[in-house]
Image 1 (spheres, helix red, strand yellow):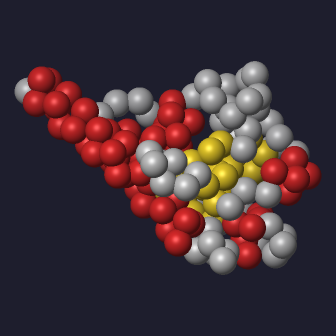
Image 2: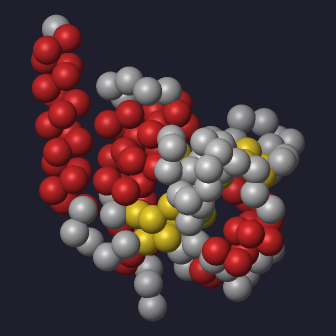
Image 3: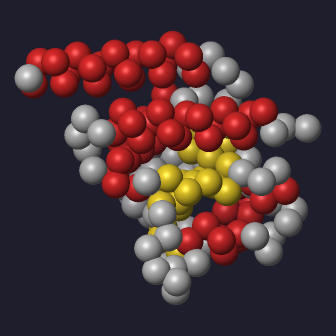
Amino acid sequence: MAAASRAQFRATIDALKQRYARRAPVRVFYQIWDKPLYTLSSKHIINDAIALCGGENVFANLNVVAPSVSTEAVLQANPEAIFGGDQHDANDAGIGIWTPYRSLLAVERGNLFRLDGELLTRPGPRIAQGAAQLCEKIDLARERRK
């Protein structure tokens, strides 16, 4: 059973790599939380998923795994796509905090995406499913370029 799960996981990851790795890069901001604003650096497995999809994490170079960043830093990085987890409560603005910033590429192009955060943030076989969802959305952001 474990060998079959491992083989399926590997096959999914390999297929995603083959499909997306050579596509034009998309600059991505992955938002973990909005109060305060947290993201992930290259030291987190989600960065690997972003890269697998041909994305570039705009905060990959930070030294902390889950750094706090300012709104101004995100605006300056001007990502083409912004990702966040599902909204679990009405007080959680999530990625909706970016909608007033209409000159932000991700907002201008309609690239504010919610993903099932449980698939990507909890390492295990389901991360392949999360990566597949992430890749589809990054590819959609590619298609929305002007």
